[in-house]
Amino acid sequence: MGYDGGYMMGGMHGLWWLFWLVLLGVFMFGGWGRSEGGRNRWREKSRDTPHKLLHRRLAGGDITPAEYEERKALLDRDAGPHRGNA
Image 1 (cartoon, helix red, strand yellow):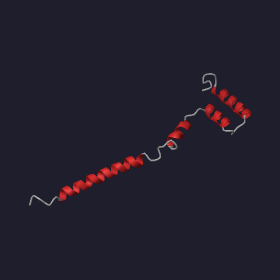
Image 2 (image 1 turned 60 degrees about the vertical axis):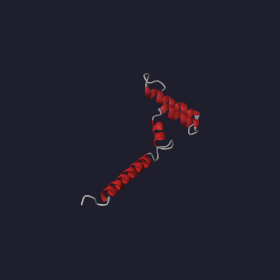
Image 3 (image 1 turned 135 degrees about the vertical axis):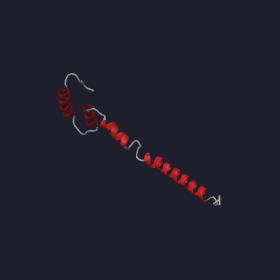
Image 4 (image 1 turned 180 degrees about the horizontal axis):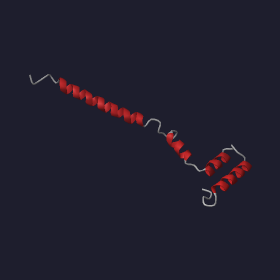
């Protein structure tokens, strides 16, 4: 009457295994795509100032030195005297 052959204990044991497997899956797939080439790299690029982006385009050969100087002058003019060349 009081002993059911361990059926209830086996059921709880199975639920704990399921809990730990789900938790392991969350940790494994939760970090998926967070490598250097993932979202973090995009965030770093989005923090660049317009001057840094312009300099990067010059270094990459996307624009000529004359275009660089022209666009830099526009940025400096729009930034005003209080911002500087950050």
